[in-house]
Structures are given as structure tokens and as C-alpha cells.
Length: 75
Image (cartoon, rainbow, N blue to C red; front, side):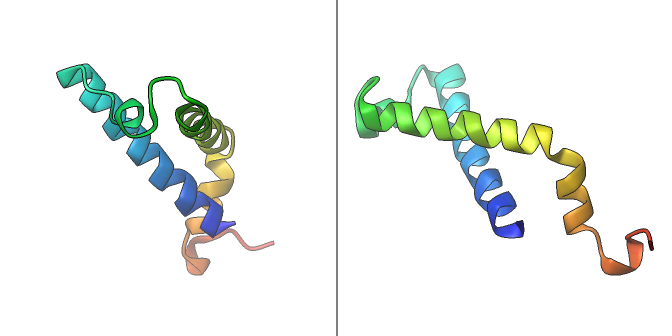
């Protein structure tokens, strides 16, 4: 699961940088690379949204997975 956590975080950083470019300069890098609202750009936007949902809903589980073994509660 840590691999999925890392992939989701990377996708979210890329999405955040794209939104930063849109907000600051009116430049949509995803649309520039894949075409405005093309199937590929919709997939990218969809992946960013799914990763956000994954990270948002799984926040507590992600924290637990990434804690040091000595800091995790014993059963």
C-alpha cells in the first residue's frame, strides 16, 4: 500500500503544480500537453481527482502505515 500512497502523492503534487500554473499564469500544462479536454487530459484530471479522494478518505490509514514501528500502538 505504501507504493499506492507514493503514487497518489506524486499525482497530487503534479495536479497541484498544474493548478498553480493555472491560477498564477492562466496556463494549463495538462491541456497544453494532451489537448484541451481531450480523452487523455480527462484521464489525467480524473486520476488527480481519484488520488485526492484516496488520500482524503484514507488519511488515518496512511499515517499508520508510514509511522515508525516503534511508534505504532501495540495490540
